[in-house]
Length: 113
Length: 108
Image (cartoon, rainbow over all chains, first blue to last red; front, side, top):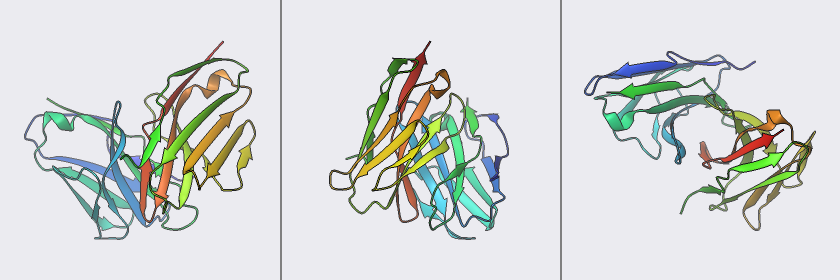
């Protein structure tokens, strides 16, 4: 069974804090993704990575950065958290070839106060 | 224009009913197509891939029409446990594009 784990289920941070969200997958997937999910907006891609040390911006990268030093781990960094970054953050991984389906972690609900 | 568009619903149907969801995608270069299911406060999980020839998995049937850029999901004999949000997902290259989801509630 594919396992994608995220470091926290719930997180509360203050405005201006630096926030690290960690994601680990155990299926040797090359591709990893960070999304945020908000009511009425669905899942929006923040960043993705198709290899170690490689990253690509998604649709909404502003205010975020990522790090992929090892194949199994993909970190999302909020450089200076703001209240509009309160959201559900979902990590996913996949192979870059058929089958293409993504496997998601359980999500981190981040509240910035 | 959004990559993937879905009717958000909600769809409220009685047990045993048949319900159909539709989804359209804007980029004809899209390569792979999926339906995901997301339960309340849970992560999305793959329900089924969608192929041009159509495919069936038990009570679920998915269809793809590339000419019209349209994907559908049919659920027959709805069960209470089918209550969830159904996400239409399209893949192109290394990226996945998600619809905002269609909410289904199956009523006893």
